[in-house]
Length: 261
Ligand SMILES: [Zn+2]
Image (tube, rainbow, N blue to C red; front, side):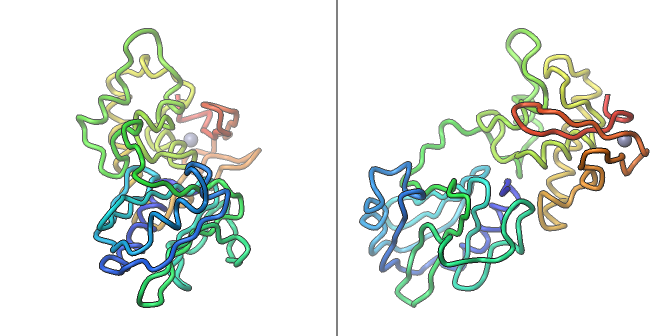
């Protein structure tokens, strides 16, 4: 599933069309689900020139001479420009591209095509997307922004894993990054957020930023240390402890029974 690191690589790919003018756009009924109709996309994008790209969490933003175009990638969405994919292959996604799975696209005056490829049909196109519900971006999270993640007004708060996945708190962390951050921090993902000790909070921030840097360099969310033990009956690659698994924050979560307390 595309998380912040994958969408950042899509953004870098989309940089190639900065300066190009859109002559035609299209979106199918799935990609246009958040728009009034598929034709809204086609009408909105015509004759716009791409001026810049940006991103907030898993939301790609293509700035133009008119509206801002947004793309969300759901479970299996990949951005392609002509034959180049923004990523080699997603962990849960297909490793081949088929015309029938292209949901939306932009065609430029120079003949190039940018397309959204998505077998699972959960990717979405947006026009002037609303960013107000999204927390700070995970890839550039500052210490000050991190305090928002661990600050809970009252009560114990949600499990820390659920808190990390809450896009309104921090934008971009998905299931694999969430598990990798907690694995590196040595924290049980079920720990209520407000019950983290100050030592755990420090380890969490350091593991968070280290995970982002390391996995971005390696090339994706699926290249973390905990992945080696991420299967039923798996063992921790650090200490050989049994890896446990259950749903936390609505997602299948893996953690080490020995070093994640
Ligand atoms: Zn372990």
